[in-house]
Image (tube, rainbow, N blue to C red; front, side, top):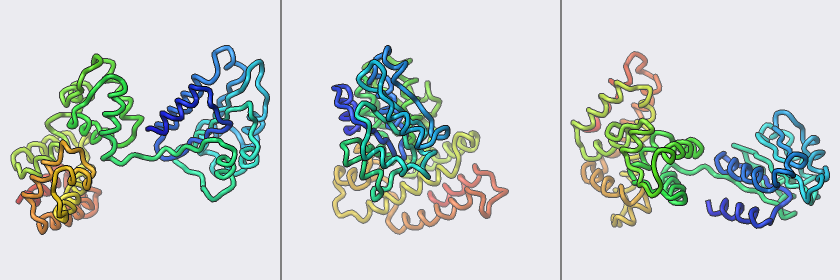
Amino acid sequence: MDEVKQLVSDIKSGDLKPIYFLMGEEAYYIDKISDFIEANVLDEAEKGFNQIVLYGRDVSIDDIVSNAKRYPMMAERQVVIIKEAQDLSRTIEKLAPYAENPQPTTVLVINYKYKKLDKRKALYKAIHKNGSIVFESKKLYENQVPDWIRRVLKGQGYDISPKAAQMLVEFLGTDLSKVNNELDKLKIVLPKCTQITPEHIEENIGVSKDFNNFELRKAVGERNVVKAHQIAKYFADNPKDNPMVVTVALLFNFFSQLLHLHGMADKNPRSVASALRVNPYFVNEYLTAARNYPMKKVSSVIALLREFDVKSKGVGANAVPQGDLLKELLVRILG
């Protein structure tokens, strides 16, 4: 995020590079940087003749080079943006000769989503050699997304509770574009300076604040049998919104973290938060679960979750409803 801010700041100040090669698994920042260049480098009068947007599936490397070598008309520079450039992955190295000697009056922006350049090959080396930019947008780990949500909202005048941020991640996953779209919806209905709560998430996005994987994990950790089975019943009644494969994966991750916790000599909350990569707000939940599940029991639960992961995918349990599978799993964990 800091690297993105620096890139945007440099562009705003007029420090433009001849090539911006934007690559990586996380499309969100690739789109953000490309859209910023598209909107801000040229003024509206210049864009008509000097801003070109091409798509990888429709062009060749020769087409890109030909457009990039064109001189701007009645402007200091032109902008050439290649979207979906990953469609050119088989021939992308042919861009290396242009990268060796790029047109100084062209800003060439290449959106190379879900892929990366081979750093050993000529194109990557040529871009670096000539002072251009290679930006790699890395996928965030699930435990990093709640903090990303908090930082994004803080920059826009909002706050969010840890539980609300966790609910968003569990419902939407780690796709930052999807998460950002939902945040935009919340900002439409909530005034600035609002702290976004689980109630806001439930009312505006449709995620139950009481019946979700986050609450199931907490109930299991506390050995709250009644609450766990209430959630399991809700999941059984709403199977499309609560696929068992996701629930099993979350519980597997939780018990794997508990195994790690049992092996730690220093169980200071700050050390636990750092080692398990969880928000300090949730550390007590893990410490409580570790007291309720000795290491031997944690190991057996992990083996059990492996068994039910296979069953949740239809292997050896084709005729068993997912809701019944989950209830059986909980009985065996909590028993």
